[in-house]
Length: 130
Picture 1 (spheres, rainbow, N blue to C red):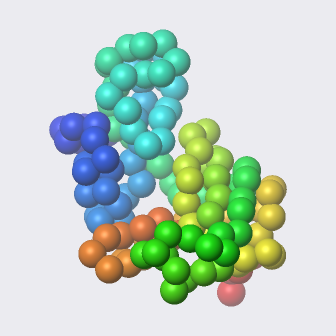
Picture 2 (picture 1 turned 90 degrees about the vertical axis):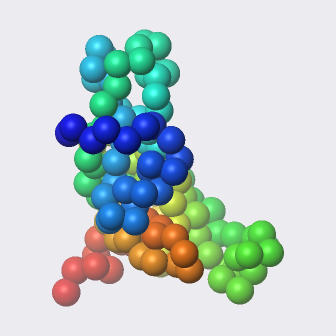
């Protein structure tokens, strides 16, 4: 991928606004990172490139938030979790489905506009099937 944006939180959010999940890949050791980083934490190389990731994976951890930050109070309870993408990297994200989505559940992400920002929200693959 030949994206020329810097490896910043703003660039990552900009890609989400374009409905793209982008990480970084080290050109030296091929390690992938999400969120993207300007330097590889595995080998230390600063030779990294943008890589497009498919938002499909498995729930690695989850928790139900009953008393969240003030800005999220109206959404309580909600589920947050860590999703291990099929491509390898992990991402912390909202997970729909509450207690029915457990560790090991296969999930798929979709991009949703929440206020001024686009978020990636995951839900069970069985819940997304017709």
